[in-house]
Length: 237
Image 1 (spheres, rainbow, N blue to C red):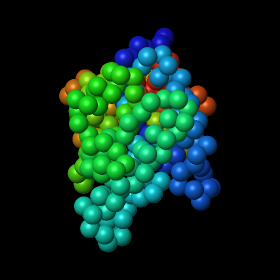
Image 2 (image 1 turned 180 degrees about the vertical axis):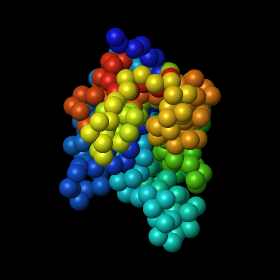
Image 3 (image 1 turned 90 degrees about the horizontal axis):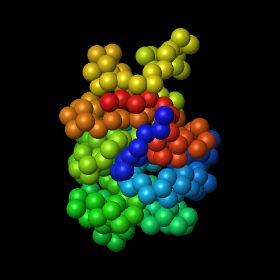
């Protein structure tokens, strides 16, 4: 059964933009594929916002673990997300999808500052909005950014694109008997300590009644399928 959405937030990890085994931090071919899938969903009239991570360039927590000040390391990571956001915007525009980048840290030469009402207006006008620089604050993940922006924009759902095909009762890479869920409640995910998102992001979604769909973006066409309402991955609501 397909699901009907009007406004969605797509959370992309930075690693998803990098080709495995390549020295390139951003693969133009992968980004083009993502852009074409978003285009197909956008043509249905769906309002799409994107939050992109920066892990293909930098991980603040890892750098902090090697001696760097954590807040500084997180700010570097925020700048990495802006590079990814600009790359995604460039490819969306190349395939004919109007888009805007808004950043939580002002950098007026390359992007708009995040202003909620302007972001909503862009969506209403049929533009894809890509959010960079996280929340603008250290110690918060891009999962939390996705939950925060979805709450601010009144989004119907968050799509979390990952490298696994849903949420399991245990790590499927370590346990052959791991069971995948098709549907979960927020309470079930909490009681079983399933790591769907970090705690802050998960609580925001639960408090604001925003479902989370976790799906495998490596499966061809899955981004388009998820955005257009086909049943892929696991839905938490």
